[in-house]
Amino acid sequence: MNYVVGDIQGCLHGLQKLLKKVKFDPKHDKLWAVGDLVARGPSSLETLRYLKSMGSSFETVLGNHDLHLIAIYHQVGRVKTNDLLDDLISAHDFEDLIKWLSSKPLAIRIDKQHLLSHAGLYPAWSFKQAIRHSNEVSDYLKSKKAIKFLKSMYGNEPSTWDDKIEGMERLRFITNAFTRMRFLNDKQGLDFKQKCHPSNAPLLLTPWFKMKNTQLKKHHKVVFGHWASLSGDTHSSRFIALDTGYVWGKSMSMYCIENQKIFSISA
Ligand SMILES: [Mn+2]
Image (cartoon, rainbow, N blue to C red):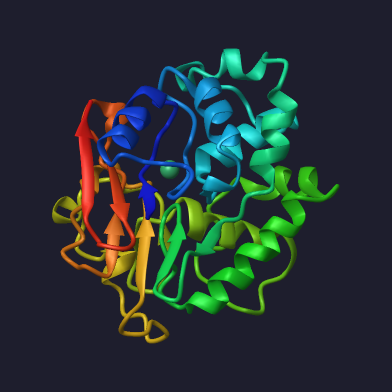
């Protein structure tokens, strides 16, 4: 079976409880993650060590917190105390863990049906395009140009996609769409101010998954995390929201690709 887990955020205990619940067997099963493996929770270091040790029975996309950790390693990003990353940053295997993490993409096509990314799929993009754009960022992240990218990664602009955008602005948009997106305005622009549940959002803002995507095929499903206040509430079986706020005392959720069931445990 293939299981996709929501934002772990350094909560290894919760992850292990959930793996036990589904009787996960690394010999036969594979675990996928929506990213944000680290930060805010108590065991970021142990979480990364554990997931890395799973070898080929684990795969993940990167979330905003994972990218920020990579930036911290390269001395581009600043450490926030409430991220609880001190022991990870001073660990003897920090470099190994970062090398491993930096090799992970922003989007993965699990199979013909399922696309996985941290924040979701920008409504103007097809699955194919999404993978292409994810590769554009990964090529940088895996190379000596990583620092150049990480230095330009932060910022909210450009807010709308245009295939003509080039260079670091292009990579910044792709990164923001895959790792920070929640709401879009009426011009398909990314809005980063609101983190609330859609029912409390200002009128002109629409969740990305409610925007029309003409590229999406009927059988396509997008699996994502990042949006804890959504509590899994997309009202659509095509958009599977897995961040259910375990690190905030709520629950951790897992989606089984084969039977399309959601499993969860509370904090
Ligand atoms: Mn996130």
